[in-house]
Image 1 (tube, helix red, strand yellow):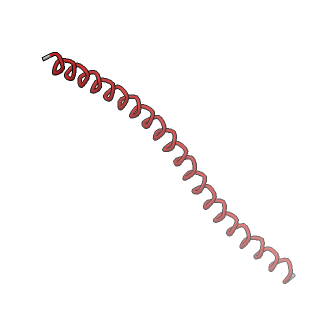
Image 2 (cartoon, rainbow, N blue to C red):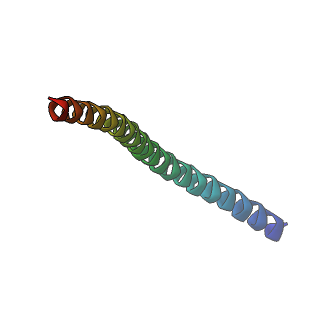
Image 3 (cartoon, rainbow, N blue to C red):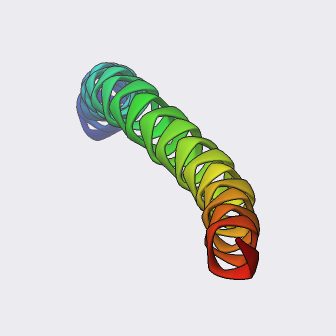
Length: 74
């Protein structure tokens, strides 16, 4: 009877330890996931701004070439 009681107590304490450990691990993973999501969002914003700058540069190049043609034809 004593060995059954000792095994039950050990099992309950082990279960409590595992649950506490999993809870901490989950909290750490959530913090890391939030940080990663934030970094991905910043990266995506940077990519979006880069595409906009490239588009603006293409328009600017076109305008400059048009001006050169106008000045060259005078």
